[in-house]
Image 1 (cartoon, rainbow, N blue to C red):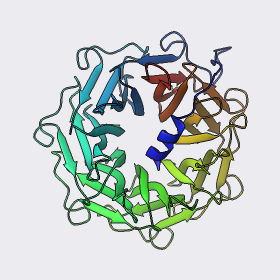
Image 2: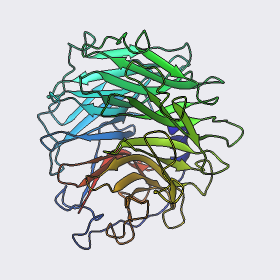
Image 3: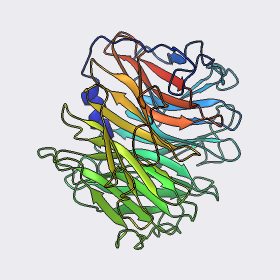
Length: 430
């Protein structure tokens, strides 16, 4: 699962070479962003990281994650102007933090409403054995929106174990759908989804009580979520994870708008796909205009041979053989382990995946693919680009696309060093 991979990756340290902008080619860092395409921001002195990113209609960039990881971590949001400077109209200095509990709170998903309000979803009290879904909504100036849950915050419990969040999406009607896991620390966790009304109350039209759980294949977790044009909900993650055996695999579940399984998808609303004999996991999902589902993640993530893994499925849930020959594609970065965490589909149908190249420590990694799954050589020469901020671990988790086609990756820098920060890089999209 996502948190397991994070902890493993942060243990690795090494020397890196910084990517430079040689020409105005797709895949190169955008020098109009902070001078060299990169910006790193401190929130605390105790380790901060971004996990997810979104772009507002005015071009401002919002990053969410966790601040103060080594003591009382909490939700953090940072907003940047289009040029990479901090937007001081947001929280007074561009930064906002929010506590839910005295334990570990962190945001893992972000979405922007049509009215400009910002929704962040994550964990409240993760690791205590009784964590909960946590959702906060912010006004455009960074203050908590008290029309949501009374104080801008809501929490939801599925079980008496750890119920963590990994993704959030907003429906066309403004309702908020959150994905994660129920009883993640137990022997048989499940996909878990919750849907909220605009005021933060659970939507009883979804699953009867606003909550839905799905047993896909044993120990399951939903890392990502997307809403199709017809209102069906797609969740992606892993199924059958074992702490002692490498058996996890890509998992997709699709739900009708009322939360029931969509049986037009793979017969029962669920499917699983193997890339390796090790653990494979979906980390991000996107919907193409024709309704096809693109899932990205990691193949063999518990090994030194981990790679970006992409799969595309038809509307009916079958592997799309026009993608990579069998519906699946794997990509490494110069032979080093690589982990894909997020995905966007561009207007021309090209697919972009972002994440981490872990060789020599960790670097931001981004790859672009043609519609058939081949790496796009017009992007950084061979379809792949890597960027680092420091000589320690730098890693990206969130990816989004601007209206002008440029691509924004967000994560953390200097993990393993003295001052981990939230890090953002912007790449030219054309």
